[in-house]
Each structure stands twice: as structure tokens, then as C-alpha cells.
Length: 113
Length: 113
Image (cartoon, rainbow over all chains, first blue to last red; front, side, top):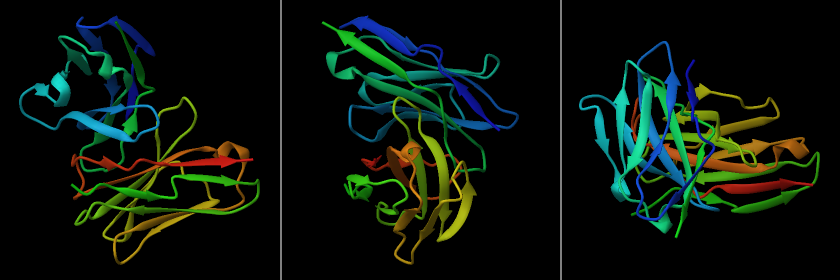
């Protein structure tokens, strides 16, 4: 089984500041890693994913994440946030070969002017 | 581009009633997933179908059943509804599995009174 831990439930940050949302996972098998964003009253939208290859993954809206196998982490970063980035961010894993996503508890990013 | 369609978007039921949620995947996608997101919770995987056969099963209660039809749409049937079933129910679809991106619908918000 896999599990995901998002270390921060809320992250307040000022507009144009950098941000890092932390995600750690555990699994006894190889996994695929994902970050999804959920805006209020909307579905989940994929930001980026890591399947294999380069450990630095670039996604939409200027976000990127780095896979660190030794630390079992997949932290999400953005060098300069906007008010419109205010949303809930979910880290998720799926075991290679399986299909279901296991989500973390989410991090609420609050961008303040 | 076509997205995942879910109906209804909102549903209010009484305890012990039944409910049917529908999901129409993105055209040509062969895999459908159902997730349940309780208030302030992360999405929990319920069940998935690949080519009309159940492919994976998560924390789906025995009171719930689901199927995927020949046109690839899926229905989640919920019986003997309980107050705790109040949640946002997401459907997602993908083309294949094993790391392929799951595209989420807008969700059906179910309220059980």
C-alpha cells in the first residue's frame, strides 16, 4: 500500500513570493507521483506528474516539482505566486501497474496581496 | 476539448433513499474511476473500471455498486443512504492506466438529510 503525507495543511504567502508545498510518500513498490490543484467548488486539475526520467518536472502555471527518491519526497515549488494560485493542492501517488490514486490530505495555499 | 461530464451536479436525498450518479468519460478513454471527497477531506478511491470490467476496488461500501456500460459511461448506485455519505463524488477517466493522467469531472455534490 502507498501513503502520502503533506506536511502543511495551510501555507500563507504574499503575492510574488516563492512557495514550496511539501509532500512525502511511502511505498514498497515503484510509484508514479502527481500534483493536482482544486479551486473552490471545482474538480481536480493536474499540475504535473513524475513517471520516470528527469527528477525535475515542470508543470502548468509555472509550477515545478522535484522527485527525491532517497528522501521519498516530491515537493512542489513556484518562484513567484499570484493571487489566482489560491487553491487546495493535493499530492498523489499510484503504484506502478495499478491505477488508483492515493491522495495526501491537501495543502491550502493562501496568497495574500 | 471535451471533458469528463458528471450528472447530476447536485443531489439532495433523505436517509435510506437511493441515488444514482452518472459519469461520461472523455471520448476514447477506456478507464473510469470513482472517488469520494468528504467535507475538508482528501479524495478517497472507491472503484475503477477498465474496458467495462472492474479493475480496482478501494473503500467502496457494500451499499454502493457501480458499473461501466458499453458506451463507456459509468454509474455509481448508492442505496440505504446515510448522513455520512454526504460528500463530493468525482469521476475521472484516463486512456489506459499505469501512470496515465486521470482527468477529473466537476463532481456531484450529494447531501443526505
